[in-house]
Length: 113
Image 1: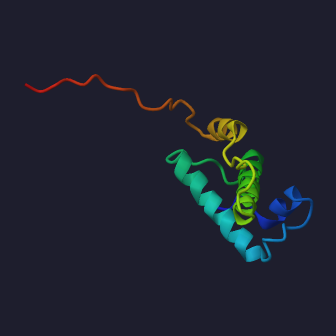
Image 2: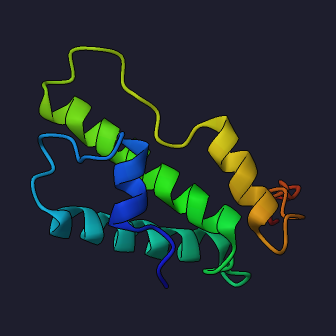
């Protein structure tokens, strides 16, 4: 499934890729990785590959991953940029068809005798 694209990611960077991202193939691979990650995170109710909101979200995640990679490449001397911001997580949850999952509930533990 293709949600994130090199062209859209370039737009987020003002029309050109950052210097450390010299080939579009690297960005394409990252786009595919993010799409697979979104599918895994939202399985079995995989978010649409055609909705505008899903495409925008995927491209923003790729953008944030590239910023993070540039930070790590530069020696990580400043505060680490977050990839999964609260806003991205909220939007992912909203886009999921089943947004009712609230996590695991603890079950009472009983000692066997």
